[in-house]
Length: 151
Image (cartoon, rainbow, N blue to C red):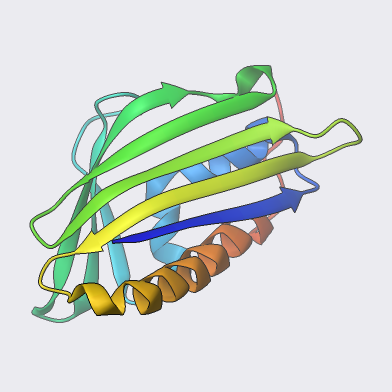
C-alpha cells in the first residue's frame, strides 16, 4: 500500500483549480497511456463513477473510481473523495482546494494506492512512483490553458 500527499499552490482562483482537477476526462490529457470514461450522466458529484484505462492496446488495466464525497469549491474551498473500486487497483484519493489569503489557491492531493499482487516490499517504490506521476498530473492540470471566464 502506498500512501502519499502532494501539495501545490496555483495562481488560479479556487473554483477554477477545482474545475480543472475534477473534470475527470481531462486527466487522460495529462496521464500518459490513459483514457478516461465517465460512466454516469452529468452533472458530476457524489455517485459519479468513472474508469481510467491505462495501457497499450489490449494490455492494460482499469482503475474504477466512484466519487463518495463532493463539496465543490464555490465558496473558496472544496473537497472530493474517490474510492478506487477496481479489481487491480484499490484505495482512495482526496482532492482539496482552498483559497489562499494572498491570492490564488492551494491544492492538497492525498492518496492511498494498492495494486493487487504487488509484493509489500515494493510499497516504497509504489509510493515514489505515485507521488511523481500524480504530482506531474496535478501540475499539468493546473497549468493547462487559460482560466475559464466567469459568468
